[in-house]
Image (cartoon, rainbow over all chains, first blue to last red; front, side, top):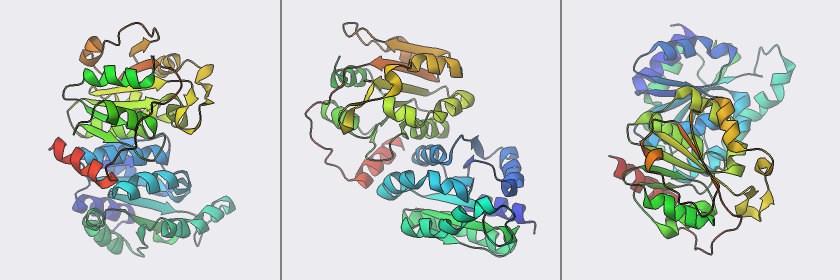
Length: 163
Length: 182
C-alpha cells in the first residue's frame, strides 16, 4: 500500500469527515486526496493553533475531526491543546509529518523534531509511530474511537523513514 | 458603554443562535447577565473564539456567533483570512473592543491605533457593522438577518464587572452545549 493512501484510507475507516491542514512536503498527496473527497470538509488554515480551534468547534457541531500538520506546528499549539482539548476533554486525530528524524536533510528541522515526542508526553497525548503503511492504516482506523473514549487527541507521528 | 451592558443588549437579541464566548471576564459577564444551553464558555485557549466559532458554523447549519475581543483577535489574526475564504453564511464574529487586555489589568492593545473594522474590510469582509456611539442602541435586527460572514465591531469601555467565576466544570459546559445542539 502507498504510504499516503494508507493514511487517507485509515482516516476514512475511522469515519473522519472534517480535516484542517497545513502543508508539509510529505503530506502533499494526502492533502490532495482529502481535498478531492466530497464527504470530507477540508479547511486549509493559516497556523496550526487556529486549526485546533476550528476542529474543536467542528467536533461540537457533530464532525469527526483530524488535523494534517508538520511536527513544527506542535510548538505553536501547546496552549490550545492543554487549555481547550485537555480541559474540555475533546477528541481529535493529529496526523503529523515528523521531520528532524532519521534521514533528515535539513538541520533546522532537528531541534523541534527531537522535542516533539517530549512535548506530546508533557501534554499526555498518546502517539503512534507506524513503520509501515499497513500499520498506519490499521492504527488510524481505530484511532477515532480511542480518542473519543479517552477524551483526548491522539497523534500519529510519521517519521521520514515511514514515507 | 460598559462591556457587560453591551453583552446584555446583544444576548437579549439572540433567539436560537449558538454562542462561543471568549475566555475571562467576557464569559463571566455573559454568564451573569444571561445563561443558556446555547452558550459555550471558554475557560482557556485565548485567541481561539473566532476559530471555534468558524468550525462550529462549518459543521452544522444553525447560526453561530463568536464573541471575541480586540486582544484575542489580534492574537489570531489569520482567523479573519480563513473565515473570509470559507465564507460561512451562518457565522457572525462580534469583537468587543475595549482597546486593552481587560482580564489581565487593562494593558493597552494595538487596537488603540488600528481600526479592526478597517482590517476586516481589507481582508474582504462585506458585511461590517460598527457600533461606536455608547448612546446608540445596539440593534442587531438587520445584522442577524444578513448573510454571513458578518463582522460586528463594538467599541466598549475598559474595565470588568464585579461578577463571579462560572460555577460549571469544563466538561459540563461542553456536554450541555452538545446535548443542546442535538
